[in-house]
Image 1 (cartoon, one colour):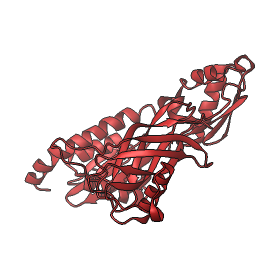
Image 2 (cartoon, helix red, strand yellow):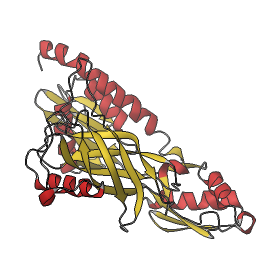
Image 3 (cartoon, helix red, strand yellow):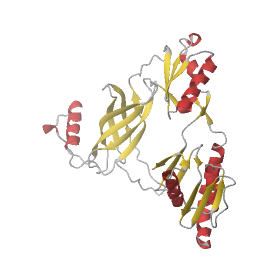
Length: 349
């Protein structure tokens, strides 16, 4: 690598590599990092539900559907329900557009709560700007109506007043009112199932042990790498909310497999803890690195030597010293994995 190219590449790259080195240095010594149980696990049955509905947006400035039959039929049926008889049951108007309305129903939703909705055109409308969504029932997978949406659309914009690239998708903030409770007899539950976001046998065993220690008995058991079953102690009978409030704040040392994620499009590289490298020599373009056992062999010419099975922090520091660019890192880590020197899973995005 010539001096000029190193002088240009290093300032841009060194920031990235220095950040990676600091991250790796923070991760490697402890081997595991503490996280609250609520941040790494979910409770079975406590989740969002998807709602969907079909509606009509009106009030557009000639940017609606031009020839969509479904829009005309929908307007015709609407007018008939409102007492205006329409011949042929079809209406054509470029000031209206057929849309699909979607929303997420939060857990323990109650009648009267409001949620945001997303409105997406399904016809040939060019823009939903300035439109108003008419009353739209929103159904869940069981075909029951859980919310009703209506309101003025917002499609967003940028500082200079121009609209964004997708004017056919908009949102109605707090545009849906929940009409049906999601009934879960949560307080009366006798047991719970926790699901780890990233299944791992070591972490699951730690969670079960920590819960048992907190409750003072054998109340939790790990069924597999991602599932922990918890029996409600008699002193928490009928008060499961307090029990889970206690458990979800338990700090757990999260373990995971060593992994390196490479994004070739952006040059982003993220490396987890526990990554190590076996003795190996690397040559990539004008770069040369050799990983050797301590005390074995002399340092070759033009080769930066690392000893005693370096970790990610050591390797990143060495590559940083050579002014390595992200694209070089991607090729290097792929090759290290190919020859079996990199003790970690490699995922390429």
